[in-house]
Amino acid sequence: MKISKQARRDARQLLRACMANAVLDDTRVRQAVQSVIRDRPRGYLAVLTQFYRLVRLETARRTARVESATPLSPQFQSQLQAELSRKYGAGLSFFFVENPALLGGLRIQVGGDVYNGSVQGRLAALQECF
Amino acid sequence: MSTLLQDIEAQISGIKTGVTKQNVGTVREIGDGVAKIEGLSDAMLNEMLDFGNGVIGLALNLEETEVGAIILGDYTGISEGQEVRTTGKLLQVPVGKALLGRVVNALGQPLDGKGPVTSDTFYPVEKIAPGIIKRQPVSQPVQTGIMAIDAMIPIGRGQRELIIGDRSTGKTTIGIDTIISQARLNRAAEAAKNTGYRPLYCIYVAIGQKQSNVARVMAVLEEAGATPYTIIVSASASDSATNQYLAPFAGCAMGEWFMDNAMDALIIYDDLSKHAVAYRQVSLVLKRPSGREAYPGDVFYLHSRLLERSARVSEKYGNGSLTGLPIIETQAGDVSAYIPTNVISITDGQIYLETDLFYQGIRPAISVGLSVSRVGSAAQIKAMKQVAGRVKLDLAQFRELAAFAQFGSDLDAKTQAQLERGKRIVEVFKQPQYNPMPVEVQAATLWTVQNGLMDDVAVDKIKDFQFKLSDYLASRKSALMEKIRNEKALSDSLIADLKAAVIEFKQTYK
Image (cartoon, rainbow over all chains, first blue to last red; front, side, top):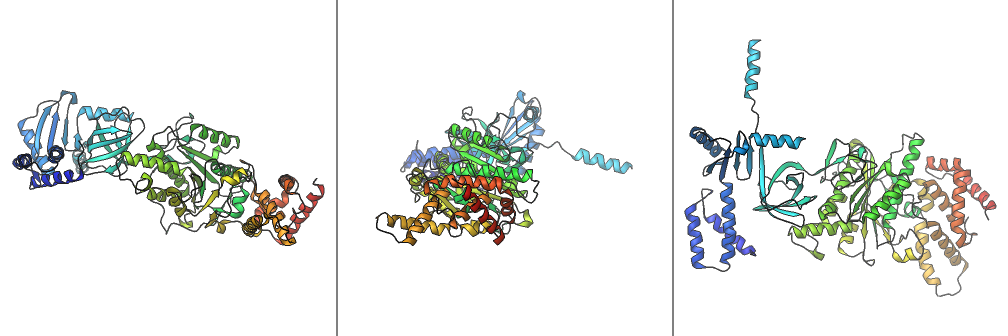
């Protein structure tokens, strides 16, 4: 679908209206989508498509994905959450995933930032050196 | 002692095996050598991006939600959803003397099958040109070995002189002749152990050329023994537009290394019309807004920032120089098209080649009226200035009179003499390709024609006379030629010697 400049601008405006304290507010997002569908302004489909994309990117930006080879203790998980929240601010949503392919260590991804302390990552880095 | 050990222990335990932070993104769209990547929030402009498996990209568009990157190399292995990493490095190429005699691509990788390039120095492809403080005026000559250029449109070290003309008018030949001339001068200085001579290294950048053309240039340079002083950067017509766009910048970086290390270099961009076309393609697939003739708005800046990097730096910064000879191909002699006017305004003069002259047999087909060198006259040696000072004027007068004389009326003796002299000057300036002439021979020949010593030679015999005279001067009067070369000026005694030599030659000439 061709998304016009106006639709992009509207979607961005909509996203800004859905932010509360620089964090995306779920209720506001739902309300915004419902109100757009109800009112059906000109080019609403394009606006919603773009809005969906922006929300997806914003959610990804505020998502911390922690991968580990073995399950992490609840105490360590909360410690990690506190550390990451201190670095990236409040409002992060956390996912703890088990990934035996890492062999050992942790791989943490917050938005586009990746901290790869896994054995797999180090082996890959070593392989690139040769 | 124990506290010292404890201190060290504490420090060692304090060191953490740091987990480096990386910035990643995912490919959203890929096609035409351009990828759109989501994420990569930390990407810098012109930063190298790692697509994995040795594929490198260059971030050219930083947008609100995505990054537009051009892929250097094969992009067919890249798929949607693939992870891309920033590298924190700007695009760089190997530089240094190890590249001399090599043929490389836009990334500095060898194409000649002579093994890897052994250089540990790298320069960024995009670099800010030297500022005002670092520069000094152009004052040393680049001897192209082409008499018409050295006499009338002299080029100095650090100058940017445009070579412009239609297709097949001898633009590349001027560049190649210049390279061959430099190689001869460099070799002669090396043989004579002349430490005062600053060798001029050459870089030939082929942009969008046919592979056969590049191979031909290589063969000519090899035959003339010019390869040890030359680097060829090739982004041929079959290379991707991104490589064609980067090639002149890569070549320029290699030239800048010579300039920064107190050496002189000359770079030939063959040609910038095709470079602009390649850049237009890259810009259009990146969905940048297009302007006149669909070129992007920054096509002027593209060439100005490239050509501004040619400079002569001051003594304090090593006295090095980078001379630029960009080539532009015009369509049906139209110099007022977009790209030609841009490059004409950036450079310090142009050598304009005309199809008509070329087919009249005047080769190099330099149009004296339209060609100009804005700064080169300061770099001309005194001997050349003495003999060539009036040539441009004489030729212009000849053209005017020749047009007038076509009406066939009787002419007075003075006009007749001017016409005859003009015809001889035109003949003298004809020169076969790949045959550069030493500056002292040029000066002696011009002196001969200017002082009427060729007036009694028939016009169709002038070339033969000139060839034999050069031969005679080089073989029998080598001491005189050497004096002119060393003194760089024609003193009264030298003029007397030269006159005697020419008269002596004329007695034997048949």
